[in-house]
Length: 123
Image (cartoon, rainbow, N blue to C red):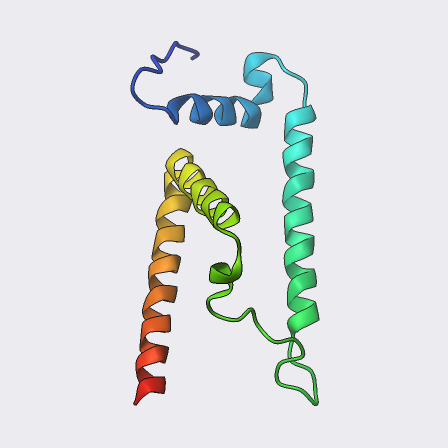
């Protein structure tokens, strides 16, 4: 069931193998700590997601209790900070291709929405 994988030209193969090994601890006779850690991380992400929604949910009197982040906020950051964010997104997208594709689709949709909003404002 366990075999060797050549890591050659595919840089994300090692990450995939390690992620699979963490999800199947009895396979490699590890303890269950990695699985418990992943479960706790998932529960924290779920909790924080519901918490963020709860804080921004519509209430009786107000439509938007807190304003959303303004478009173009990344332009106000320093160049090294912007570069680090973009580089981090590229690295994560390369190592986790499904996340990278969905992130790319989201960024493209946001860019299209921004272009359409600028065109409507110019009319």
